[in-house]
Image 1 (cartoon, helix red, strand yellow):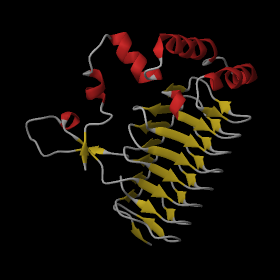
Image 2 (tube, one colour; image 1 turned 90 degrees about the horizontal axis):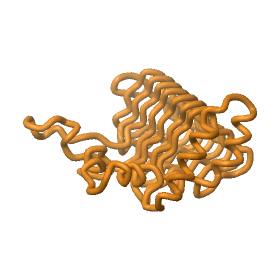
Image 3 (spheres, one colour; image 1 turned 135 degrees about the vertical axis):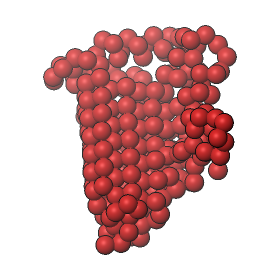
Image 4 (cartoon, helix red, strand yellow; image 1 turned 90 degrees about the vertical axis):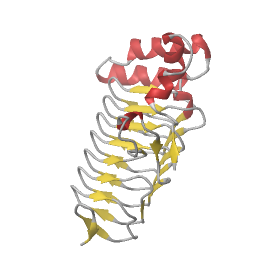
Length: 239
């Protein structure tokens, strides 16, 4: 499948002023008062360290989101795009500089109860629904993408520097840079319950990983992984 949905280039090409485009990217079509509130809360509380900052963000940030459960921890300098499309369950913990980025209306990011996200991890959601099950831990410096949907089950462990590819770019034309070519996606991605994924793993779009599977560190997953199996390598194979 090829799409142009969610590309930075298509968003920048939309008509309107720079402020108008920024408002659409951050709070959607919700007006400038909502943008002012968004800017005020992030500026006033986003960089306050320690317990005071955690307390203020816990008090103020739910005003921006579709839903925020009890005892949610927002780390320093987190960023959010279209927070009205984001739901956070009870006891979710976001590390410092985590980015939750919903690029289009109709897309969504949903983190279940007791999900933990490590520092500087990015959720990029230009389309579909990103759903993370309860008790799942996602490591630092990772990137999770979704164009047509990403589901991660309960009780999973995902290591540092992991890249779950939500989409790519066509490379048919030799005349155009790849970044300017249509977005491609093989389908939604799915990771079952109690899956363990090591550090520096890359999982391509459209891959399904079954319950209880294990992916060893440094692997490239290009095809489905059966439940309970263990894979490793580039590309990943049974081991």
